[in-house]
Image (cartoon, rainbow, N blue to C red; front, side, top):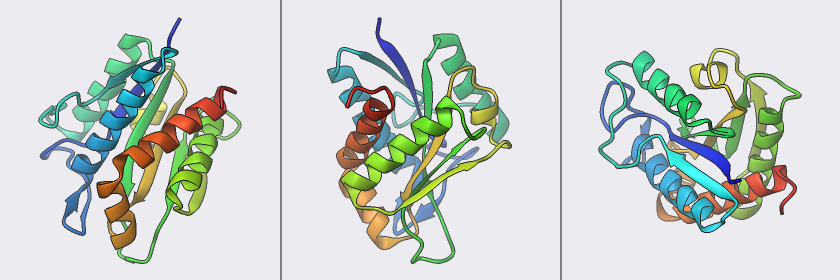
Length: 188
């Protein structure tokens, strides 16, 4: 039986719930492409099924921030996903801030361990600094999912180097996340 991975490409194409912007890029566009690349990589491997929160670039979820987040969680829960991975880009007023980091609802959980493996592989493949995992109990997608859920900030859209790498090499990020999933499952 295939392992079901729900890939949430954070944010909507337009408000409500549009994402960060930096270096001429929009978060929702960058994570859309990386999510599609990750889904394709998982589908090539017969051990996985993948579902995207935004199957098309125009997919708009909900009519507010709250309903957008609820639609993603409800879709994953109804599908019976085994794991939920929410993809985002980070932003900072300091354009030197760089690297990947992740969040889970609590420490010592499968989600936290999955995030650690994803970050380790992302860093190995992209060369970006691993900023580590943290606990965030206030994030709806981590609180309301019925399966282990991790939110990954792939890099800083406000950092010219991170932004260019995410925009120009979505397959690198997809490969890093895919390898992180394999490492977590003991398949790497």
